[in-house]
Length: 174
Image 1 (tube, rainbow, N blue to C red):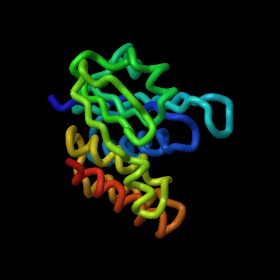
Image 2 (image 1 turned 135 degrees about the vertical axis):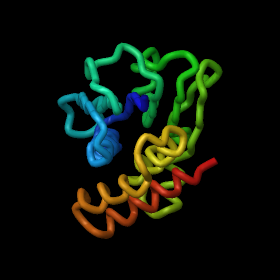
Image 3 (image 1 turned 135 degrees about the horizontal axis):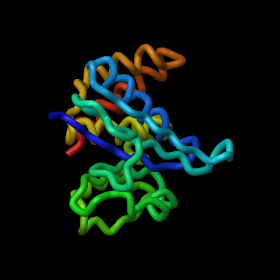
Image 4 (image 1 turned 45 degrees about the horizontal axis):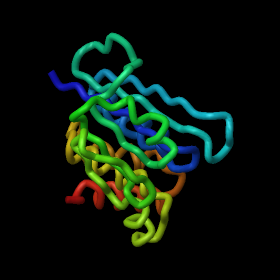
């Protein structure tokens, strides 16, 4: 059985909902059962923005999980608020450019995603760098399927290419 859960925690404007939705759509295209549960604050920018995803070959019993096996953290406030959601020993992917964690209880990957994104020309692609890192560690869908979803879902060709480049950069991150 192939099943992966992930909790993506950030604040509004960082693209946590977007990468969750992109991964969910790629999983659906691959014929997998998928739940995508976004939760966001009422603020236009800067409020909480989280997504719980479950992707499975089997039927999914509930879209809600008290704890997850995988977490992507994009902002310090999100880590402080949601750190109890990840199981001990779970995969924790952190944007270490702006988030500090004590990684000893987790399989932690500290990724300077914001710094990497700035070096690529846009801070806005840090989210896709983190998604690439996640996909490399948890290959639930093919990289090519994610690229196709990005191409068809982007508002501009330029943004699609930047997001794909960031996804690939994260996928290659060691």
